[in-house]
Image 1 (spheres, rainbow, N blue to C red):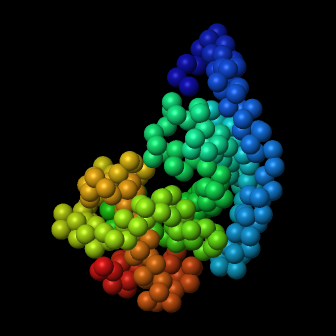
Image 2 (image 1 turned 60 degrees about the vertical axis):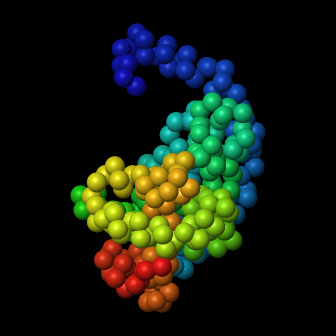
Image 3 (image 1 turned 90 degrees about the horizontal axis):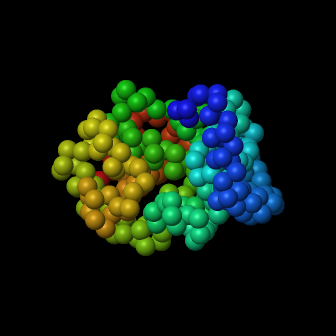
Amino acid sequence: MENSNQDTFFPTLKEYFSHPMLMQIYKDALAAFEDVSVYEKELSSANDIIAQQLSGKKLPQLAMHVSGFRENVIIVNNLISISIDKYLGSNYSAYQEFFQPYERQQMGTKYIARDYLKAWLISDIIKTNADEENLLSAIITEGKILYALSIFLPEHKIEDIIGYTASQTSWCKQNEKNIWQKIVKQDYLYSADHMLITRLINDAPNTNLISQDAPGRIGCWIGLQIVTQFAKKKNASLVDIIEADVQTIFKDSKYNP
């Protein structure tokens, strides 16, 4: 918080935490997640797969918090906490004022285990070097994360892993060749333009650099296709995929839809 004046800081804090809307969100979140056994079971199964696929690795301690729609994921030492007030369902009344439809799309309980695992992969397993990032490295890193999640959560549909609807996934499959050609012909692939990379891999209503009909995060979807093809062609283990560099994955995948 910008205000560090002792005389006003704590009264401001008290006012924030006693706000009626925040109190209601807190009550709703506690009621919705009184029983978390289903998520514990799902994450326990994922932890067993992690032990098999990544020898010596295991999930850290997992927790939940209420942030008032602020910090979705908090990572400290050996603990990952997610903000449960971000998973009350896309139709939750308080979301309508604060979040766009494309954001609400992933604010349901089926994304809880995925988001714990994604936070762990990003913080502990799949490292990135921001100084060397271009679009290709960014989408392949995202592809590695999505591929690992599909291994850890075998009962989840791939559209739930990436956070798409079935129709968005169908559009991507039908237009895969056109998406790739647009990326290549526009010389996007090796661009280090942060704004361009963001527009292709971040949440958004669409990816209008490709098409008004293209869903957001289209670069992540393409990255998953490249990594999946590499895995099939090289019969690669998850460790092989995580450790492989960007150019090896791209070259050996021979991706050209």
